[in-house]
Image (cartoon, rainbow, N blue to C red; front, side, top):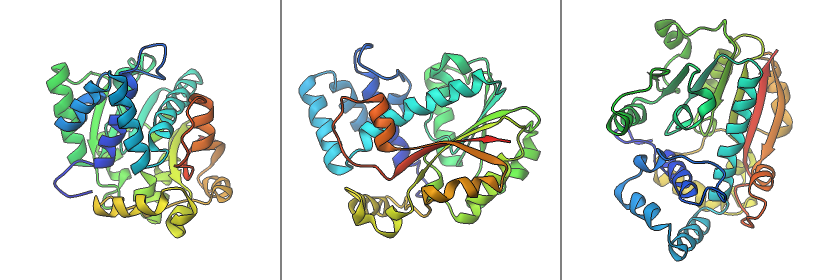
Length: 290
């Protein structure tokens, strides 16, 4: 990410959520009325015009051409993580920690966590922009949300936790969406070590990319172009897992892998009517602290 800007990829995810929200209630997976406010003027206009079928079709076709599968898998993943989070709350989780929160608006749009303490941790550029956007649109920050700022590749989460007295004794649902693929292996290990300090029964919901997309991008539809575009944005992907190796990796942190789904799987579950291909390398996993 460029030093003086927010994440462009975070804005694209907000665009996908904003476009989904423009659908009629019976047709959409979720509603996110806040997502549009994180978009630049051009993307806000496109979102508003998407109420016209011809414009929406053009937008979806353009996105599919540029990043095959990203839109359909992105909205399906959003709903999938919403459901995993709700299940965590139902199973006794007492707090929500969102690592690399980006423009995630779950603390506002999901009724079932409005009374749950939420800590959002992110890069200062994105975090400050988000705080200001909330203040502009809501007048104030909701009392259950706390924003903490960190550069995951340069700073220590343990120091941040000590400084702000994060409570590890209460089981947490940790959401780590759209982040691991930008980090170093050392940062990944350090973060899972941090997550493992939360109480037994804590849930970690995270995304990752299949390691093969980094080593052989041509093996995935649109993979080579995607990596080139990310390089131009200075948001290069640097890390991936081999799915078969993930259970053993998590075991060292006393975290048991309970779900691990690729884009095709959660797309089939939540948007079975969509026929787009692509983005199969993007995966969502759930681990539970033992």
